[in-house]
Image (cartoon, rainbow, N blue to C red; front, side, top):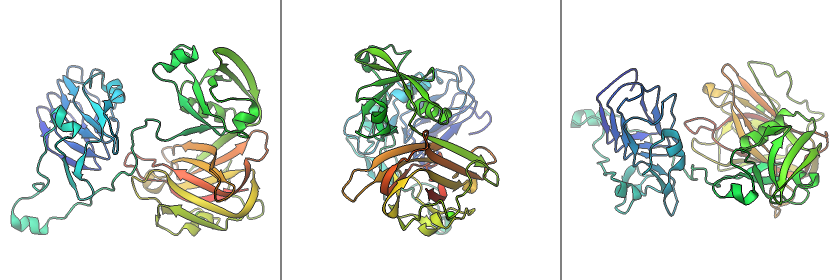
Length: 428
Ligand SMILES: [Ca+2]
């Protein structure tokens, strides 16, 4: 609802991929709706708008734009659907967003038959306990038989196969170590204040860049080049911003602050462009390692995988994972173990939205070996960018490692959970 609509009652809607947006206005009651693969979008509300948002089921965090907290008269008793979750937990992130939602929860909403389009919830659903009421799934749209006969049937959205709520489900890697932000009681466990914070190195595998620099499991990285690393995003960004210059790192081990200088590390450069790449051009055939084959899991659509190593950048989808697919994986086979110095990835901003890149590259030495995390890439296409390029390198211009296979594990990059239109993978 755009531009000032007031006094509406919005209820019993099943939104297939779309969310519900309420722009500025007064006295709207939005309740008992389901926003599949999407959420609530309050935009530029007035203070004291008296709006109500309750007993809804959302699939992601809220998507607000400039709404003063607390949000309206009531924002509460909503369920953030997290498929497969056994228990329920308070929707802390929603509470942070609205400064309300004290009774809202994260839980599996227990839909009766999501794949078949029946989004009624089972009797023992936690949504019912909060006051959600099932509504008919066959009374939508036009009602007369004549109109029904010519009405189109909507396409049901792909079912989300993985929980979308970040609860330690998807790992974050830095220099081969898996890392985690501190929360709750962990601050005092490390002997640091909430203001200082830090990133916990949860595992530090032998021979990883983190281990080679001297880090150990349980270390807490607090600053890089004198800037705080309170979030994993900051940790990765500050590493990339150093562009190969030494990283002066302050960290905590055994409740004592320590320092080290890291010179051999992995970082990512990126470039968005309207036409030609200036800093990250396509490699010619000579420095490039030959790709023997690419397979994907699950299957991709639109174009064959061979376009990912034909040396060209198309204005097309490429072999793309279906909307909503998380952790789609491109598996690159180099034929045999080869030393790798650099990994380049190119994408096209198809429909002005699929150029952004969000993926982790893993190296695999043999069929039974565990994939080794090499680097995480997170680049947003800017307005007007036609293409995006990223480059994974080491600061010492040494090798990233020796591997036979590389796995590009990708995540959706748009609000509608669309995946990147990858155009070319290059390795040398
Ligand atoms: Ca290509």
